[in-house]
Length: 199
Image 1 (cartoon, rainbow, N blue to C red):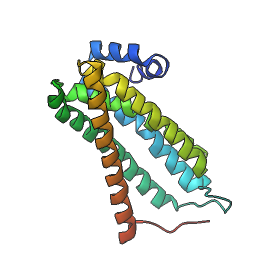
Image 2: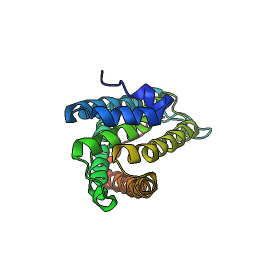
Image 3: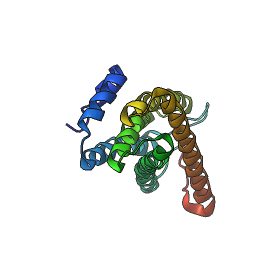
Image 4: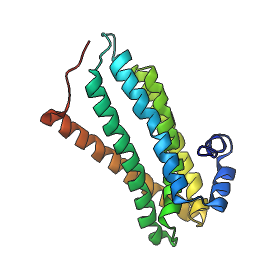
């Protein structure tokens, strides 16, 4: 089953990381997991943007035309999947510094399961009120960071002390990557890739 580790990561994460580390599913399994979970924010944000409308403050709900909402959702899906792949590459690249030598599949497993709460919280877009989505996103980010800190020592087979520094390095790189993605999005919107809003 594609999603068989998700419940365990929410209820008993350390034990579930140990199960994941023992099994080491194939690259295809990790790909299917991330490609499936990344659909949640893309589909929910499309529906919210085109059909419900985002509420920011006390004003009217803001919508996008369906064609623009589809394009933005596709771009979001691609960016999320590429972001997880890039995070997996960073995990593998930094491993040498911390006396670990994971293969890309192992690094992708860690990145995919760590990113899962952040992707699953995309369902909150179905209640498109900015403060609510922001608070839910912050809670998901916090839990994703916790999963990373608890999973790195187990998945990379290193002591917890090194795992803490390793995880902190990955979090830093992930935040830099997120800021870079936001910058690219802002530049694209400024160059006219945005759309007209409907109130």
